[in-house]
Image (cartoon, rainbow, N blue to C red; front, side):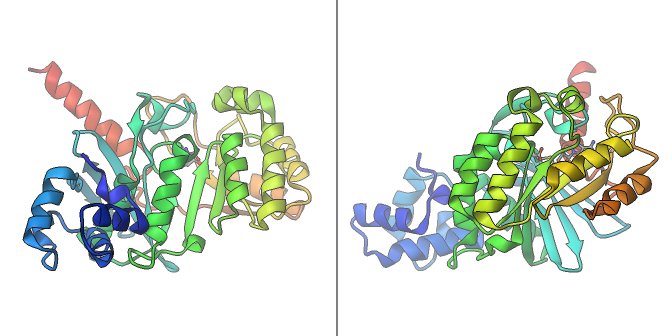
Length: 347
Ligand code: SAH
């Protein structure tokens, strides 16, 4: 079967021509897909026999809402989507002053193994296709009725571990004939896969790169993030400096502050010295308690922030949204998996 929705406009146009159709059919089909039709029958300006042919040859399998939770505190909406093969992924819609932002997943599960993260506990099942990433944005907008203006690739999965599909997704969601979301409204977060960062730098996209730093020294970082044993934090900082040189884009560093692990003044000083020469921004995240993890939230976030600021580093403490709905990454999927497991056990 052809994964039509993962194809760009030129690719669909070429496919139409190959099927003996005029070129403008490509744009018609592309437009329908990006409006979120659930069947080829809905493509009313496409000849009926072509619709039949497409139905036989192509996949069109939008995700189903498996669960939906809405925060009473701040309107954050969390979706658990069931994909065509039965796997589940999460997206979170956050309502910021600067616009509605959807946080999407890039893989089913994750193989990066960060010690504090719920998404990686059961490993990676598979990569998502470009269409499955696009559908999270599209169907979050359609289901909620709220226009989406920003996207963050910060849900389940490591985007740079699925980079080809992510790049294709960016092209699709950026398309003027599709959702037309500008690169400057998109952020991509990585745990630090250096070759991916270097490949991204070459493309000079206008998106915002977020790097999950979580520790500036190799010993601590290797302890909480296995990726550090493959790409050491020194190598990571070099790649970040090179990324800034090449793209001129400021990098955002994510830092989940963990009690007694990465919250010392010495570590703040080290971050500052490593970022010298680059306008980085540090996002301090109050650690979300994950049942499977031994780590606890730091009690000295404010002091840590002050210490960074004393070196001229901009550091903000991230406002936590959706505290009443398991909104942080991987938690809802974990819970659904556990409940499914319990259901099986009690049978
Ligand atoms: N794989 C990518 C994107 C997904 S994770 C990455 O690592 O960046 C999105 C962010 O949430 C990352 O910064 C991740 O380190 C962070 N995160 C994961 N578990 C967390 C937890 N329990 N508390 C706070 N932040 C967490």
